Image (cartoon, rainbow, N blue to C red):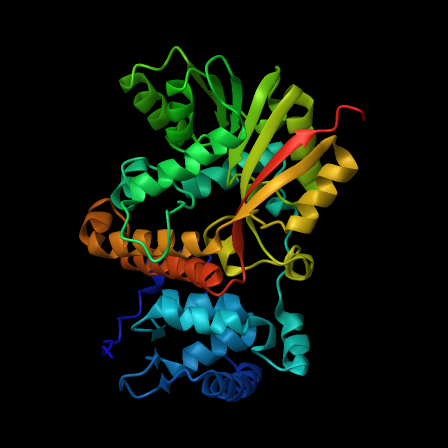
Length: 411
């Protein structure tokens, strides 16, 4: 096992405003002591070794007092924040998080989960993906820097799960990304003359491949950076006459389309607007048309339990985000639209492999990330985000699915 040197704690002025100082005080000390006991019990039961003296272990606590104070006050958010500040490390972060994720429902005894609920932060109005908030939420992540994303994504600039021919795989990531895209286009029956609407442009690869099939594509996004690069890529391919990239909210889309596709966009919609999202697809879909969405999903009970709570991911990575459940998607379409799910493909392990490759690329090119102006705290945040996400898919706690819908024209 590799040893991990203690990182230097970032100076206060270098921390992001949302990264608060570790809580202190008499109450915190008592809560931290209880958290330490619970943490040691849980990790021992799971076979995860923990070191507080710098010796090799699965989890190395560089500043135990800060670590326990943060998790006692803010639970999983505090766990992630303690990683950002360098209070702890893990030589094999993804593997360790996967073990924890497999046991996430029973990681703490029931009484401890109820006690922790006292400190859970509920989402406010600013987290709702209203038309006013949605552009800011999207910009928070997707407008960070096209150059940053280009450092770790494959040449297709696809920022969603690839679909490999088999796992484990040494297949080129770009080939697996094209397989994912082509399956979506095949399901949607996209070919010459197809009027295609894409909700969520990304950096334009799906629109490029659809246009190359002869489709006429309208693709909408709220990311200024993504729209700019997508237009340039489409123009360079000589396909600008077939693709219209619009900086527009999905709710403002009009027209009629033979097919509608949307890749990992629903996660940025929010539960309140899922009926609106699907109703818009239903509204613009031509008779006999097909809609295909690729969605990251979570178990229905966990979605219900966490949908109104702030999480580490919503605080630092995707403000306003929420993973739907398959049941929630079916409920929204059946109650509010004429859309009916025709088929679905589940391929969560493929996302775990995709994320592993992205994380490796970021770490291999860390100096280039720094050269773009991103600091060490950002690098730790991004590593934790990618490995935290990978753990969810590897453990089977979250999934990614391609869902195909047709419309019940009798309704």
